[in-house]
Image (cartoon, rainbow, N blue to C red; front, side):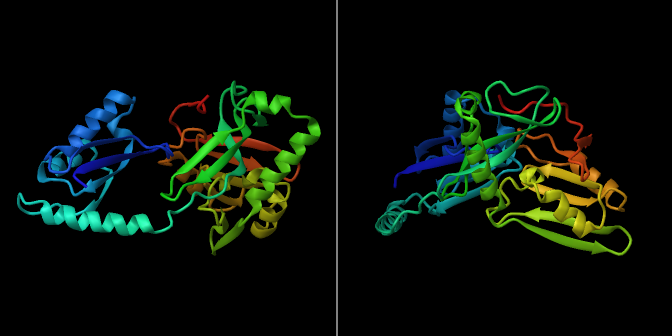
Length: 297
């Protein structure tokens, strides 16, 4: 209990986020931990979205947090005592730790294979990939795990693993991943008298990979029926956030703007707007103007 462990949560949803430690009483514990992390791993302060510590930050560290990580959320487990006597604080923290250790620890959810969308200028070198929009948008697969802390871990199907599969093995694997995607998948409608119908596609599993629904065989038919139009405009604001409207509806400019200003930082998919029709055609008609960044490869 006399050690302050500081964890730095990052944009890439790292299942093993960087952390450092310092004496609980240290006024600069967060600063010390950050220096340790920077020495051990390549990381930028701008990548940090949250900071969690065992003990409440001192005034000195609160100033450091505000200056170094202005947009990050900060949380702590135990209150820092007002004076120099830490005996009661250590005792209370010790009792809380003992009580927690007797409880059954939370378990990570079972690994689940899901279809994953990638953006890249050409076939991916390491990931298994199937082209959706030639030389730009690809479909891959990843084994996903949601940890008790809410972090999402992904282990991608590699090109070598894909090439070792027989045709039947791949179809069985892909169908299972698509079935996983369908689990809890729902279309939600929002009617506007002037603009028409706007759909959002959501999944019960934290919306994880909801954007990949575009590869489902029944996606176009279901969405077209709901919006009342064959040609669809699909806004992939992030891998997990997708909007659908008719190509002649009043929503097109608005959802295109949502894509162009998307704050998503996941990295694999550049937010984009797709044009889909019943023939199976798929075309990118707009992208977020942040460069044609490749998927991690």
